[in-house]
Image (cartoon, rainbow, N blue to C red; front, side, top):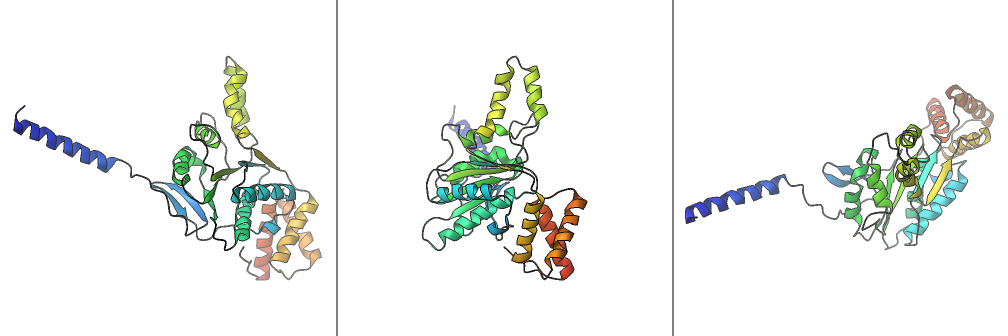
Length: 294
């Protein structure tokens, strides 16, 4: 090979290397999370997007779920202090405050930390459709001195959905495992995160039905803390409404709001924290009273 040919080949290789550099995804660097306590995980490009104001309610307004409230708060407090804590799955009835409890626990713990010089507790929401990128997120926050609760609301998996494997690996499996400074909290209407027909189909078509569904069913077992939320009684529902009336200082007689709240729940066929708050929004609007921010 003469000098001219060698130089031509070298130039070609240089152009190829430059082209590969241009199309390669940017190298991810550790994010600066000091400016906010809550973030949303974005994947295009991969980054933590700060949330200036978190949509949440005060812990004291979460009525009818006192046992679950105490357990999740205690678990979160231990984690914030650097003590052992469990990943948590909050499952059960819709509108009973599962996601509200996660956000309220985060806010309560950070209020307890106050102005201490220690690391803050960060809340990172990841969307259900981005679960496959969990390993990337874990890699980003692994080296941070802050502690993170990664939160996925309304988590479930459909038939033929294999993204649950990424979550399973992050929770306990994999070579690196879950970072010590990260907990995973999820809410779901399903206790086992997978549809019953999916499990039944696996069981009926497999050579060994038990082994076929074991990998999928065991996903829920990776959560050390299971908190079940069930439909509330009439008394619990009215206690929720009463707490909102008091918190927002609504000028209304008890006999009036009790009767209206019961009728509101009856017309919707549901008693829950969500139903109670929807009634309060309607009542405050009719009274011309703005609701207080959390």
